[in-house]
Length: 205
Image (cartoon, rainbow, N blue to C red; front, side, top):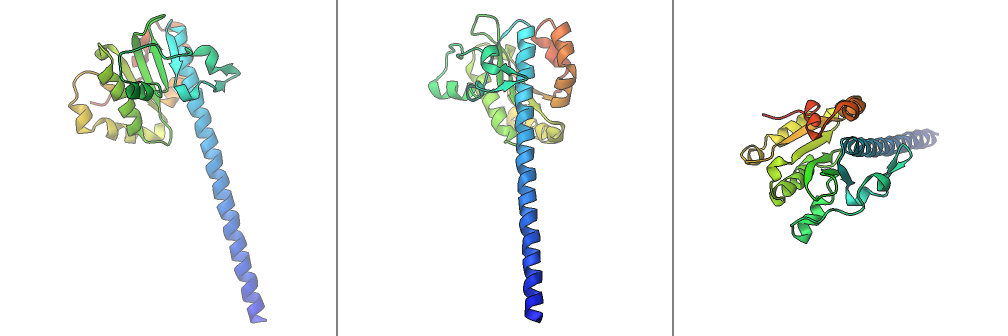
């Protein structure tokens, strides 16, 4: 009798444990979906702003099949990365930057945006740095990390790395998701060129 009660309690605890694991996994999957949806939304907004300001825009090579708000990225983005002077490996790395703006019908880069989610922020910084070290007159290119509010402290810590602070030329600024989402329409309506993004960007000093 005692043995049966013990076995029953053990099974009950096991079932509770299994249910919790399933619930936790479901929450994790839902969080991943929401995160990916926000990443896609931010890419879309950055392309929308770039186009409204008169630039050609290109989204990361592995994201061109995406769509947002019934708009296919392939209809907004350039189909191919403009030819630049760089080795093949560097080109492949730069092509993974989330969104880049170019002067219309040229290969002249204006600004580049890395949209961060749960992945390493430092990998995004490295892609932007590779871009800055490769492109002629790169000091004229604006570089941005775009990330959720909860990662702001991490961004600041990464941008304060001695190797980045000491580097001459381009400084990477950051934009919070909420700022971009809130001001997107105003930027599209009142912005004249890419410098309008400085209004919503933050710098690490």
